Image (cartoon, rainbow, N blue to C red; front, side, top):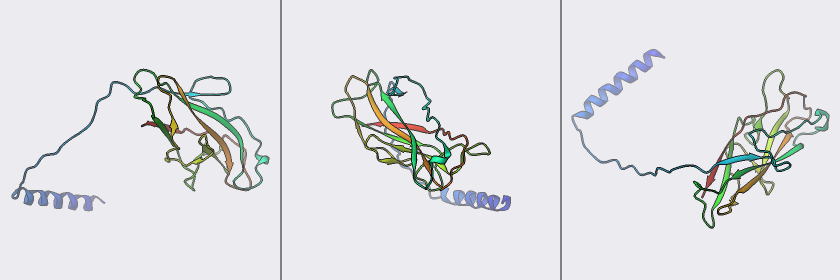
Length: 182
């Protein structure tokens, strides 16, 4: 490996030296924008209105899963877009959300806690307000935003079996999100 890197760097150096004899100039244009702030997002439990970064999925008995593709113990949660100062929300603005985490082998769901104490044969399935499944890295459908008032983007998370036998254990996941406002 060291030899190939050395040969590559020597070859690159030689090509750069050869290219300098035929130097040319040009212009690179950069375009962008500096904004004053981002729109605050909160994770809200719609059942009791509590705010935090933890969605409590609860417990489900492993024996309830008897086939592949069964979903149990759904938990509703919302991402609240504040809609106040710093949010560029105007009439007709929409938002979509992309969830990112460790995908399961199929790439369609989110892997739960790996390791000796982790549940086996189960993943977390995410759905948007219309019930459409959200794979890791895929954007949700658009949600209409309120101008000057908070908007709750509602989602549901479920435990989903990926095997006919689910083994009991910890079934947690860290899933990041990005809310894009258009």
